[in-house]
Length: 304
Ligand SMILES: Cc1cc2nc3c(=O)[nH]c(=O)nc-3n(C[C@H](O)[C@H](O)[C@H](O)COP(=O)(O)OP(=O)(O)OC[C@H]3O[C@@H](n4cnc5c(N)ncnc54)[C@H](O)[C@@H]3O)c2cc1C
Image 1 (cartoon, rainbow, N blue to C red):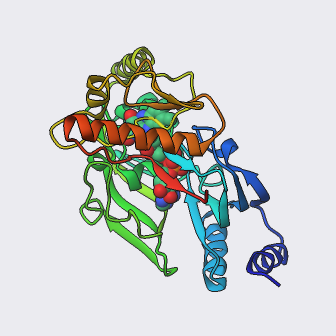
Image 2: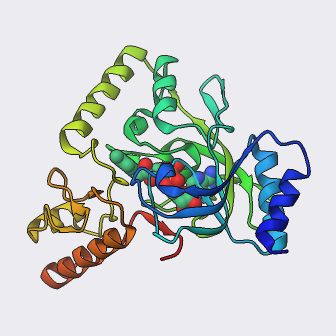
């Protein structure tokens, strides 16, 4: 019996509250709307069920891919082998005590930002337009308009690749630009503590409205994308470099450098291969003409 089948049988051997889907089309789970199918796709009901599923997969030597809202993710056309775990709607509890908030990793940053504003808690307004989860945003140290997750996070809880529960303080997370100590460690984040300040709901809601308007003006929010495709290279802006090279509108098949914001590579087709070819073309031209190296901010997973 193969490992996938063994894992599947193990999963079905007990009553479960989470949902297991076979051959899940990953285009349905990513904002880029690209990617082949995941062999086994688990959306567990809680952290315990998630950790148990991952532990069993590890013991069987099954590869594990972790995703949140899929808003910073390109899945290749061949899909994802093994077990894909989405930390999502089963893990959206929020507890507030004074100015401290504990949010489970599946909470959407945009809803949390709004909830905080309504409750007079300031500090997360910057995240109102980031379409990711608390887990994804924490590991990536998501940021916008002068704010970053590192400004508010005091503690991160999760389980390591070895199956050990851990707690990491904000300092131990060693946050940098779109980086944290957990990146590449195959650890899963289950919840995060944040320290916020008291504020006037009206002021915060006005700021949120204004940030959302700025985004809608500048970003191609009506076309599938994963946000900024590239990181900001030291001393420059990716979008400005791409613009400087005259690449707005450049396409490979259905993948296109957005006409509205050159830092967004958007998808108007159905091929990750085209999207990857466009990334490579943009990187090559920018390197040749400006000397800058554009590193992908988006995470690329799966098989060709
Ligand atoms: C229109 C648009 C605008 C955007 N604007 C911004 C912006 O202003 N600033 C910004 O920083 N980003 C922006 N993004 C990118 C994206 O929303 C963020 O990077 C977000 O934090 C990703 O979260 P996610 O839940 O979607 O993670 P995913 O894309 O699902 O995953 C990203 C990475 O996080 C890991 N991960 C996800 N959940 C967990 C977890 N619970 N534990 C451990 N690892 C996990 C995954 O393994 C993967 O490596 C934008 C994207 C879009 C589509």
